Length: 464
Image (cartoon, rainbow, N blue to C red; front, side, top):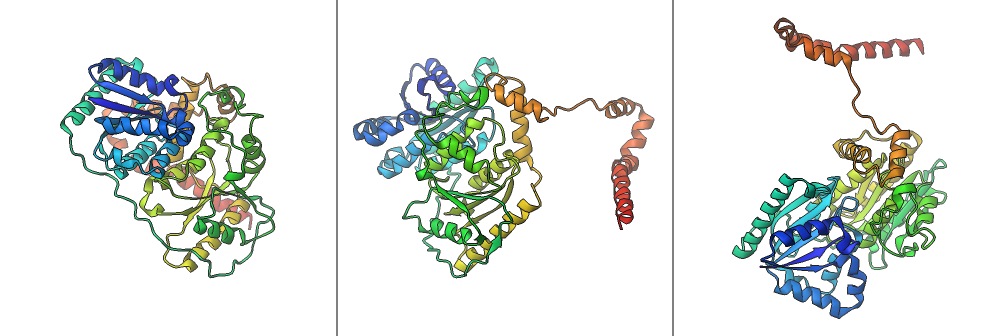
């Protein structure tokens, strides 16, 4: 069998992901592996038609495709995203139709599922036969049982290629709407109360809906609103995955482009941040992905902590719950508050006008009250993953994270609860166990809450 490996790491053959691929290549040496480092080489592929054709020809002659990538901020790397866009732009996606595909990633399991969901959706759009996904932890290759499991996955993948196994699609094709949004209501002014409002977009001239939604939203505010188009920001390239930022948050691009200075002076100083873009290939554009990747110079620290975050989106977001979860998870991980998401999907322009009005009003109201919605599993689970990894495997090279986590009490590992320990011993006695695991446990559980509520009532009465 012949398999083409499309590598999504900007580090090419020097990535952890490619070490797993090298293991598969060694263990399945009877098969032919053709590697293309498309994330690292996409700029060249975009300019060099012959180089792109070589990749396309290799895919056409292959029995299967292995999409192999490291996780980058909830998804694939921005350059990998750009390669997917390029396949569409050059109208060469037909070579992928009917090919057996497998999705492989390396990560610390922080939102690996959203990256795999995205790639599975892309494969379904390309009409590929997805054998399955394999999400490896970075150090799994050193564990014998994990190596065996990876071999089982490889065996199944090659068998699926050989037998041309049919698979069911998981994600239906997106139905693009052709609605044109034109505001019908005059914006009602909102006092920003001195809060700094920043809108970031990547809108191009042809993307009229998102441009008009941004204009309508901005028109609600008395005073200045900073609007920045990412096309005007000096971004020399994507994240290199070099982890230079791990020691003191100094990026390898420092002094070489304007992104970091702009991010620090514009995004970090804002009270309300609005991200506006158009859906492309089940996500936003690769430029937006580069923005999120490059913001990783803040490493695993929440650079948007305590800010109000909103999204203005053009496109079929209702059909992309995975993308909505990325927006939600990103905001919670940042310890920020998701004010809302407004799209151009409502049937009537007036509805969109009203939603944008409400978004403007609520963003200021939440900022004034310093309201941050409590995290769900998305935020709590994500922070615990980072907490444990920075404490352990990633303390080096992420020295800056360790200092920040230690200083800000993020190392909130469970302490010894001596009452709970004592009770876990006492319940071994049948009489005590029978008494507790009945109505007594239920009433005792809410007893502290009742005392707190009574205390609050008393304090309120005393305050008049």
